[in-house]
Image (cartoon, rainbow, N blue to C red; front, side, top):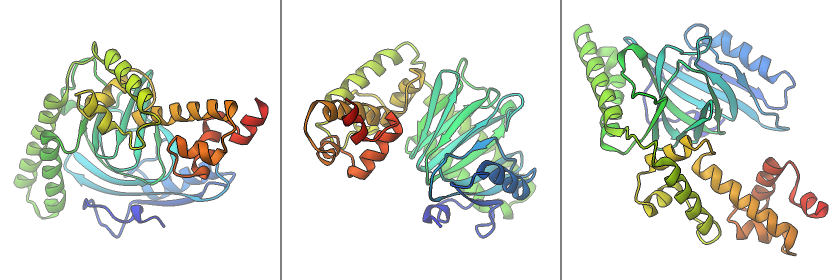
Length: 326
């Protein structure tokens, strides 16, 4: 059992009793049917199961654990998940009449709606409208607290489906502090105090949206081009290349950088870095006599096994097969 599935800095619901606690071997031929059946049996109407698909692995077990706490017409879920894909939102979907906020503690969620990609990476807050379907992908070992509130309570920015903010930003930090305190004290609050806590949280939520949203639709393509040029220049020279460093070099916030990648319809920032390193590594594999281990080290993969796994995922063949077929 993963430590990440058990330890959370948030107190949501009864820590000893998750509403959903499922484990399904990835190699099980009926893994998707088993997952949905068990989820529906445990979660019922309290935590409905969205459409989910498990990747096929020869070993390992998928685990999902969810703790839930109802707070008047809001609710919180503390969610742990291993690698899975699915769909949420839309007229026929899951939580279609809600505003859904992902407060990612570790790992990463990726949401796609049409050509838009929105990334909920660790250390960020992603607020999204759910009336249109979103396809999502969750990395293994991802933990997030999700806040769900009625869409009727929020005036979302025009022509905007999702907003990303850093958890450390003043507006987000204030909202999260209020939300955690309300969750911890909610069982002991009377009706008047609970209503006041609810309204205070709503005002801070509105403040977050007003503080974080910047109409950067016109500058996003230029920022995306500048970011990809910078990444290309630093792919091999900077082993610590990351969103915070890229944003600092371009004099923008990490949130603005994420938004530029999302509006550009490309992969996440680190997904793009990984793809370009693999492409450069592939070129060297074909054109040089460097060993697989040497190439993996040159392009800053943790070791050759991580490189081989990433290479096979991107190119559907091993590095050795790629070199032999050239």
